[in-house]
Image 1 (cartoon, rainbow, N blue to C red):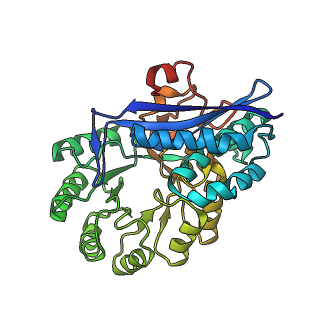
Image 2 (image 1 turned 30 degrees about the vertical axis):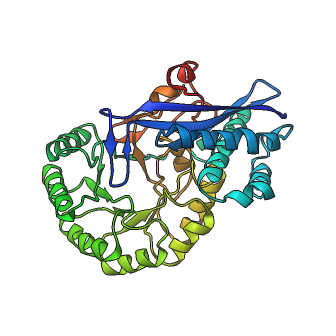
Length: 369
């Protein structure tokens, strides 16, 4: 089997309630920028990365896939995923302009498409191809109800609704101009839900170290499960200092683009819950590298769902470090077998592949040029 051509696409899908916000972003559409890798047989692989739906930057990722990576893929055996990953990652001209950001997100989309082909050729869902036994229960926690632009009443209603649907964990966005406002919002939600329900908070890199320490120490009163992205995304020493100063565990990873970046945080004891995103860290190949690193340090992995769960349900079901996955449902309408939560747990997908096969109408409905 050989790769015959590479087709690119950009999808923009509306988010919940017209617009959502965290401490750094306001988003109306989630972007899926990706590749359809066509083999010389009937097998096609689908892969994509997740974005905030900004067309100008989405085009840069698309062009990196189509102009930089696609020529290197033609006539390759798509099932030789590891060798192709090394070829693309170490391509001198591409590596010269970036080992993170746009280039790594483009590589992620291609790598996912190749794994999709590999699992389809084997006739298995990816979780099974990677060694999962189908007995594991993967718990979902709900992020799509804790946005920073929602009122306190909306937060309470959404948290209660999520618990009623079976979710055993909910996440709130923090990072307001006055951290005490966030403390009040956390207190209100914690009072509204059972203490056995996990409550996570996410600052999206908003604060400096002194603010994070003061805020972090207040979280102990509400039994917060983790404090996610409290400070600047690359500040290893700051996160290590924060980890020593408070009892609440630190979670991070969605802004890390390589195994080396994760290794710096893990080795410095600056993270407790490791959150790699296959759409940013070099695809499934890169994600598995990070998950194995975390396992070596006995740290749990809870993937960041920039893919809206489609890919990460498979790798999480297969890897022993994973028991939970973030739930955000915005892209479900795009896929033949959408990720589905019942009673707070992911249903185990059954179709061969990585869960990324687009519905026949997805590009017509949500594609942008």
